[in-house]
Image (cartoon, rainbow, N blue to C red; front, side):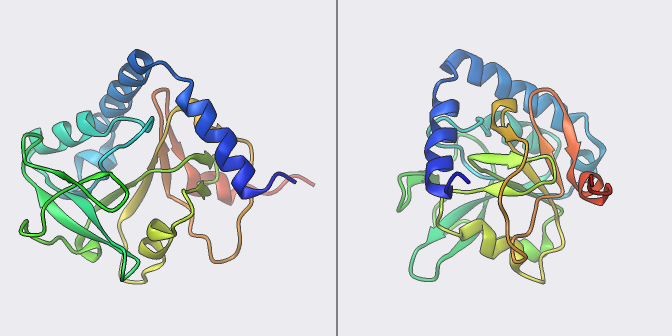
Amino acid sequence: MESKSALRKRMAAIRDAIPADKRMAKSEAIARRLSEWGEFAGARTVLAFISTRSEALTEPIVAAALAAGKVVGAPRTLLAQKRLDFRQIRGLAQELAPGPFGILEPNAQAPRLEPAAASLILVPGLAFDEQGYRLGYGGGFYDRLLANPEVHATVVGIAFEEQIIERLPHGESDRPVDWLATERRIINCAAARAKPKEQ
């Protein structure tokens, strides 16, 4: 079986190979799908992430959420505490600065948003399967966030179709996402997990 480190390397290479113009078009398609989706429309507070490297661009999603009057947050990385600290962002022109991993983050003076109060949480990943299991970057920040028993938000993985694979290895402690949003579809992962396993 392929190791997680080898799978991370392979999936990063697949995503990196998508040309920048196609990444932008795909990202805009993801934002359109989310905007038309009932769960997104009904969400009052959305915790997003600021995309980096070759990830699906989240700027169109953030713009759509702000235009719809939603409260939007983005994470700061607290390395010493090994957790994410979400702060409100009020516009794409707001000043963001690189954090510990070089990812743009809101400043510490922005209002804090508690994950327990969120309606929708958007999460990144290198790969997902249709049951919602996720291959992250190895830091465990989102794993810890999703394992928090106080967090009851709908969790949505954001990915390109190229990042959806047949099956990811997972343990009992891994919390899958509830839905996946790609440029082609929105996948109900909870329904996929409920299907009887093939013999």
